[in-house]
Amino acid sequence: MTSNRRKLILYLLVWLTFGEAKALVSSKIPIETGVIPKKRIYHNNRSNISTYQIEGFTEFEVKSAEASLSKLNSNIDKIKTLLKLSDWYELSYNNPKTLDKAVIYANDALSLSQSLHSIIYAGKCYLQLSMLYELKNNNEMIEICARKAIKLLSKTDDTNDLGEAWVMIWSAKMRTNAPLHDRFVPIINAAGLFKASGNDKRTGDCYREISELYFSNSDFHNSLNALNKAISYYKAANLDVKNIYPIASRLNILYETDKKNKDFIRLKNESLIQQGKLKNEALLRNSMIIFLVLLLIILALLYKSYVFKKKTNNALKAKQDEINKKNQALQNLVTEKEWLLKEIHHRVKNNLHMVVGLLASQSEFLKNEEAVQAISDSQNRIQTMSLIHQKLYQSENLSIIDMPSYIFELTEYLKDSYEIRNTIRFVLDIDSFNLPLSHSIPIGLIFNEAVTNAIKYAFPDQKKGIINILLKTDDNNKYRLIIHDNGIGLPPDFDPYNNPSLGIKLMHGLSADIDGQFLITNSNGTKITLEFIFNENNSH
Image (tube, rainbow, N blue to C red; front, side, top):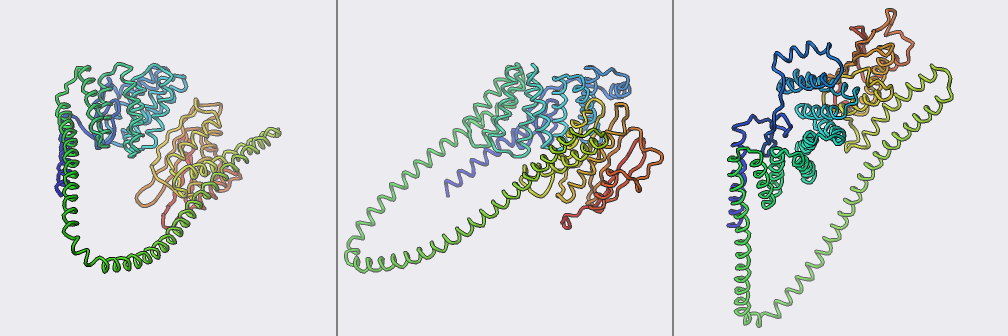
């Protein structure tokens, strides 16, 4: 009981020490749940990291810059302007509308960077998008954009931004409670990059977070060493470290207290063992006379009890073995079924890819342009279904699809298929939700038909344009898909309800399959709207 009480006191000291330290830091700096991006300050059950500020726009400059965007040449200066606008709107992340504008400007800067083949600014844009997705709580896109930034910035000498990209990887791992090793790797990489660039402040920030990770694993020694490194780098950066010293001193006290407590427990255990030996010897000596008289009776009773217990234990063991075998058989059956289901999705995906390959081979022997186009459209439809099965066998859940990730990958596929990255810009606004196979395949096919038609017909003579994609849901299980381009629109004699086009008929039929309402209208271009209601209880 005394040992447990000491452990309880020790843990209370740990909690009080770091709780007070975090309160000390947060009293000076605005805190919100998140990580440590280069322009903001966050903490997620750990010490926050202060970061450097970059010069941005005032509100008046923002309005002026937005008004002059259309007049700016497509060069690096325009990329910088777009990124500054994104930064300014990012500072108002508590307002979803301004955060959406920050994402739009970041995507515009990324598209322009890619068109100018600027590796370094494309990397900076992906880093900016990673931070914006963090504010949107889209953990998957945080890591996707950060890894793209790392891939690009690794080819440049911008060591600082490369370090910030690794910080975003660490942030994603912390937000998703990844294993401890997965959290250590990116923050250690970031510390090395900041150290190489001579950024003592950011290096100290990273070692402070490393110290917290060690502390969470009860590794007080390494935690103290990492915190001492952080202090030395803060000193090198001429920063005020008076708020850090109480943490280091109390961590040292905890380390010594834990060490002394372990020594005390070890000595106490040795003393108890010695006392037990002495009691056993006394009991043995005092019991010898009694045992000499009762030895035969006791031995007989013990033998009888031993035989009975052995039989009982054998029977229980046999039943337990039988139960364990049945449980193992059931577990193996469940595992086998899951594996078979994944294998089915994998093989369906491979078979669909084979069909795409066969259609591609067949198109090489066709001279009729309409036939070649029909085969190309069929390839895109099959690829849309193939992507569904690919995501299913790659995920833990074999029955639902993450729609933001699916729509994003499908959009990237269509961009690559039609080679329109420099002419048509996509603006995506998609809520985070999942849908089962029964709804995700029809939605994917409708999305493919609508976007393909917009790419092929909305912008003749390779005219530049924008395709807005919106996929939203509300609390009433109502979903809405809108694909709206700013192209030439529908012809005057177009009849959406009596049209011989296979694509139009296919979209009408798929909408009916999910009891949805499908509508095609002219609205400064072509606007396709699909609305449907999905109830999980009736998903089958």
